[in-house]
Length: 128
Image (cartoon, rainbow, N blue to C red; front, side):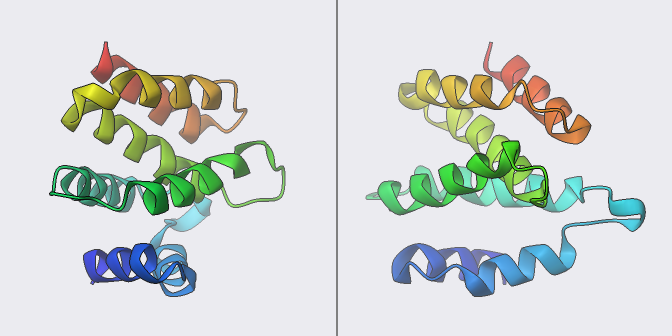
């Protein structure tokens, strides 16, 4: 289901269904981010970018928009966590894009959100 929703969002440019799906499953009790979902999403993104003619611009726009919410005090931190994990995965599976993905992760590093910081540190370590 997640793969289908991501594909639809990237092809049609309409992210509402994808975001509703992720939002409904993105948290554990006590507002902890569902890291299993974050990881599964990142794997899908990694698979997508290794296919022929991936929708790079649409994917980059989606992830960068979510990453941009990291500094928003009232925004759900699920979105930048999804972006960070995806940046790390893309950097692993597409070494030719690694420098760009590291740069994006470094921009997220100063976040005050602890779970986002942990994801960013882990992804940067994988890309060293």
